[in-house]
Length: 436
Image (tube, rainbow, N blue to C red; front, side, top):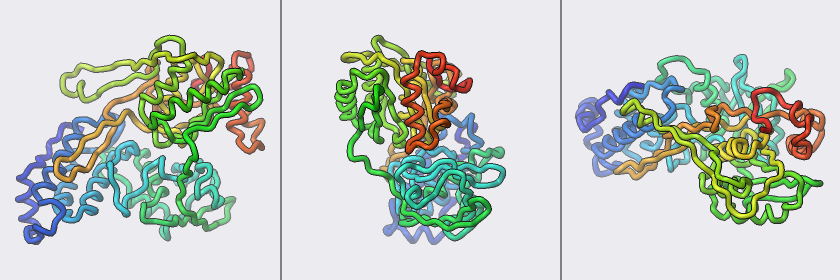
């Protein structure tokens, strides 16, 4: 991605009008004027082109994206069509963390916060690797290991091809994986998602109503034997979670260890809440996450990198901490997981996380007032590992107790009770976020 070389200015209006004279007669009925739509789209392209932090990881040719979608933005006389153009252009980043602050009935649901399934392409097959607990897909009987053959009456290959980015400078398997996730999430207007899957050589049909479990409260806390279990219910953006966590710690102060369960945090949150939680688990100021503002080095060649600090507050809980994560641990949930590993040496157990990139920045387009959000900072563990590359550990106890109702929680509880012993250290694979 070189700078924004495509000239998205009012001169574009003349070219669009010349190519499509009928547009000139739509004035008065349009969503904004053509000039306003062109100016908005130019601002959209400039913001993403200057601020997006991960062009080095993406194959996106952003100049081609903007040049190709500019006429469509100018021609989009209805708001829903205009939103659709912005969504298509933003989709060329194949980054689920990049999104608009609005949607239409025809918009795809957000990944991972509004999706029931996690799938990847493996050897040309679309395999379901995880199903969200309590979701419509789980209630319908969909399970990991099933192969998606068809989606919404067409082959899964065709459904995914319609969404895949079109303007890549090179092939990237990540783009096709992203498109599979978006296709399986469905659109807001779809009350039911229909799948054909292959299981053990047999083909079965499933349908389910996408259902995001609505938590009754921000967190659940209980003692299970001698170990405390605190499960956070997608509330890392709610300031009231901090005093709720404080009350939970008071109730669990006599436990021998603590499991913090982040498997239901797909919507992320903010660092104020995360620092509030971590502040009760440290007894001195410590760095928990590293940031890099990439746009500054693009301008002057000088990197801006800094560590964010968590400060202690209240009476600290200093007994062993274990973190439990999974595919629906997203954004600030991921930041909290690596932060607890950095500050407390907490083992992070479970399945790989959502791998959402970076810290979000936003702009509001001047005429449509549509908010555009993209990752503007790269994020890292304090040891320099990119957050999206952080690898949770799989405890041996998880396999041994696979018949348990919640095998992952069972494994985390057993591991938490054993932290500090040789068994806790030898049960984990190398390179994962084990106890420190």
